[in-house]
Length: 536
Image: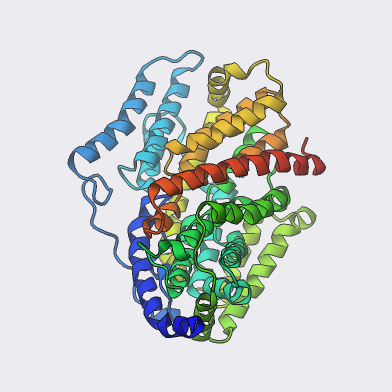
């Protein structure tokens, strides 16, 4: 009877889930790590992409550049950006020359703007870049040098891979295949969603796009098809699945160099500061054991903290079968995408042997997608997240490089982390990792967190004597794991939280306890694994 009831309720549940899921996602995605995914990402797109409607226009914005922020709120945001920048520009700082201080002032104001968001990220970065050139703080050629950085184009290419995964609906197919095959209990449903996220993470470099745009609508549809909606029935299944899917998203992001937009930025920082290459293969090798331990244990912890009351998940599997039937058999365009993606991954894995930089392997993949008709030139032009990342990422990378080259990072690290002097690195590095993790309570963007804190913390770890590779990767992985803490700390968080299945108190309590488990896994288990890899 339960199985039959689930089948009878499925069409209505699907409609409700899609409608509610799309409303929440569209409201929340633009509030976090850069612009959210194209609205077409949030719906089941027609198989013929060329007949799709144009992109939805952006919501009206006030003079502050932020939708819904007016009057006093906008003024406070601007004050938060301008005051520290002006103070650093005008006031002398021990150990820094005037040009160094001016560069630091523009950088700090830009980071605050990424957090306060008085204007879009691209506007902040473009304004900072222009100011550095107009004031003579940096030469014009140096100001534009970020656009020639290979890391910037790797991120750009990765967003186009995400576009291909979205428009062909391969992401949905992968998720529903896992659910149909393995979703025999609430826990196995959670593992199925996590496995699908890991399968997509190498090619979708935004947890906002992957978690909020692909996994969230599927998670909500499965919950509602099982009779779990926000409100009295949230505890049946939906609250558990929302938490598991969210925590799997940022964990998967941390396992791959191309899993999150700021990961290549981290790799570039490590190359500049430490002189080590955080390659795609090395990144995955360091994350694979603690990453899969996290994916295995976190759902068990969440089940204990927010136990689902539903035992029979037959409606969820029925929903997956119906969704796969709607998608139909695998189409030629999906097969071409699979071939290109496997070739790109093979190119990344074999990079140490053939010597082709990861960026050009990725660009070759983009060219192949265009030539094979998987995406069109119009698709490329319409992928606003790729172009947005290109505009804000290049200036940030340029400023971070300039801070390192001019010695600003070294001066600041020596002053801020003087209390660590005298500690052995085996004690100093865990202290830095814990501080780095919990400082994310003050950030609404993982990119802003990385840009503001990673170089200084890495320099402090090196000054304490920590092995370079261990310090670089430890901070890199925690740059993703810190998303566990709040409902605003990364782009996908407000989407899953905004569904209404989990209260803010529960979200924060679960997030904090998950962070403790992450510390145990990645500090204890991770350190042992990294010892075997020869990182220390």
